[in-house]
Length: 221
Image (cartoon, rainbow, N blue to C red; front, side):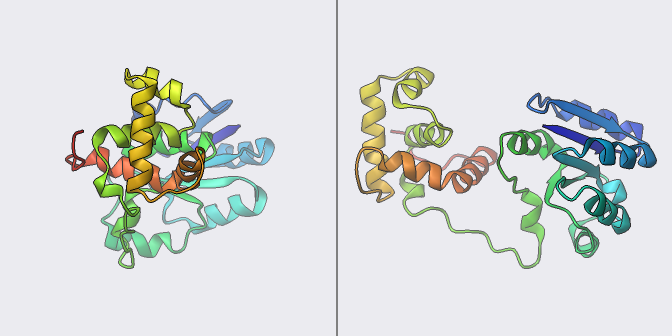
């Protein structure tokens, strides 16, 4: 899986390199010349391409990418010097892009894409029509320990693996899973909570991200 990136100023190239350490892509090409970039895209047909907000006023460039490399997903990275949201959104409405992220989110965004996930930027919350989604029913009642167990479940880890990673006994993990099921109203057999965590994985990822950026509100066990 390859990604080809375009950044106009070399100072911004350094910024991008400073915040990323993704190794899941088989090939990463970072260019500053637009013609070389478009030629490389047509030859390589990469899974992803990333452009910085330096090109936000060039909708024709994005349209050209879509036309000549239709299977390539287009990522737009907003640099710190980008205009305020009220001025950006009218420009974004003219761009054919698949994924949006801010520079501080770039590493997390590329990691998610490389692992096959969709990335949701916090910048979307600045849209005038944005409505914050309600948390999953029962989410606020989970303790910090229960959330830690649920997070690892959503990432595909088994009970014994979770116990080892959290330095607790397998029995404690099972107790947490039982309480989580009760609080989230998950009913069914032993695998029901696993299915629930995978079904709501994207929503849980967002909730865990929000929790890590704010003062913890979960109760300690």
